[in-house]
Length: 446
Image (cartoon, rainbow, N blue to C red):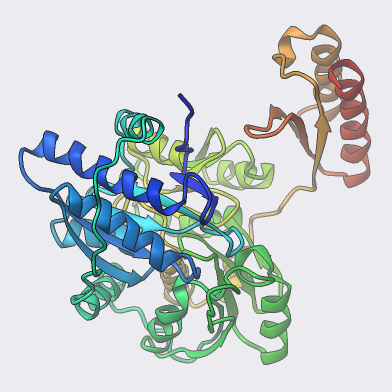
């Protein structure tokens, strides 16, 4: 049996297996059956989607399958991923289902399923859904109309949730450029920040079903940088398609990535006595500069594997207050177990306005180390430590870095690639070291 669920749910080309209409109906029916068995009653599901043209029919197919097995389904229509996760809890739903492929192009889509506490469904449930899919377990399913009668109530509740967690925040006097990625943030972010008194300039906020993430949003910051400088704005914020992450641009056009955001917010929490265990959780890809900046304040950087799932697991296990990734996906467990780009932006604004500083001033103290990443095609993925020539070459690189840099060797999870990442003080030095190690790996495993 194949594995369809990754760390972020199912993601594929819309209209093709496993995101064809029949399979999506099977997913809905299987999830409803499992919840009925565990709850002893008919489950309640809420769904939401981003702005992709395929979102509507995928959502309808899910509803049809789930309703065929007795579930009650409501739709929040186009809304952010964290918005669906919030609504699942706030409106006593048994699960929240998001139809989105996050930062992917419009022709992809996906399904991710949240429990009311914000965690994703566990692997056992995923495995049973996969088993039903491959066994073609599907009953006769009638077409259904999507119940979206409470959209206004859902939207108002979610926006209130965002504001309640930053009480008293005022953005009066600030000019903010917002890149909505032509995605789910388009209907929310400009109004949210304008409602706080900011002068808002919105770009890429006109979704047409196909322009989501297209040369815009958090993956393409060049337009935001240019607009911030042109408008002499105080800052810019860019979301991805489903707005679970955000990246920033300061008043001078410099990018404030997820690492710099973690630094700013960790400093804010520490100064307010809210970093109880003096720990920030990030992934192995976070910059060495973040680790050193935090260390200068007596804060430990705990690293996890790449993926917000692993960041969340470590946050929960250690009781830490903040964690995230370079991509701008930041999690505050006290507020939600799901990263929320708009919430991150609000908290960043609070850190700036309370201290009366610009975004560039807020990020001072964090110096990003030069980084080089090389991908090497390999024929097999043998553990590096078990290949003497590679282990020796890696040890030599670490010796030459002499404590002033960092080497990370790992394999791609989806391709036959070895990834060589080196950080250090000198770009030319780390490029030479990475090239040498990459050549060794290519010669031995290529």
